Length: 317
Image 1 (cartoon, one colour):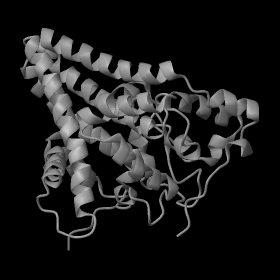
Image 2 (cartoon, helix red, strand yellow; image 1 turned 30 degrees about the vertical axis):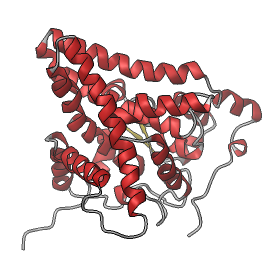
Image 3 (cartoon, helix red, strand yellow; image 1 turned 90 degrees about the vertical axis):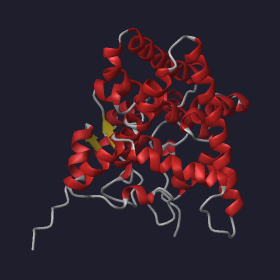
Image 4 (cartoon, one colour; image 1 turned 135 degrees about the vertical axis):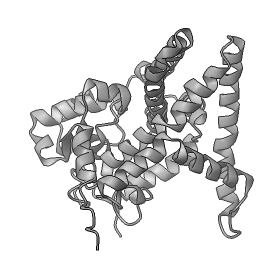
């Protein structure tokens, strides 16, 4: 099938408007990475000081872990820094590696998603195709995420692939194992460094309670919510303004669910090289032009989840 339809920026914006909305700033890109780690460090410090704050620290840290993955995604688009070496190093070692991702492998996969968004060749289609589901089905998925079951299954598969265990021999087998190793080894290195640092400050337990626990629970759940919001039950798989969704997030959703403007996903697919810190600006300019009325835009994640879980339960026989 042909690639997904594209939108030319200058079909919507004037040259001056596009220059304004697409302006990149290396300090803003790196500043977001520093911001994510700063929030994680502050939340950890607060919970180490007063363990009763752990219940608040876990979702805050989990959201910034997703933030690091989002910033790795920016690096995959070359959006963190204009210097390619800096962009790659920061995107990999400071953003992707601590969460078990590899920017180079992700880039190849993700650009295919953009090229064939919501088409049969889209590698992410399996994430959106099952929806809508029943409320009970969505509830079971969220429970699996929050109890660490999803994390355990994914990491077990990732580490098994890295070791070449359970992979059927055939074309691409070695590439698959190598790709898994390229993510697993940096993950072990960066997590080992974090554990060493926490041991040095006398808080070894914080690695497990304030790093691994958020990663295994809250991070997994909001990653699922992100995937649902971005492409599940969109109204038109052929329309580049309606095959991805923008979710207008409240301040608390930005804090706990959708950091770094990831909720502006329709704008991202329309203009995929915009850095994340310009997506909100793009949305406002599109709204002034009346274009957001033609886009798939929803207010809040509760509205999106209600739509994604709108399938009726089967009546008992």
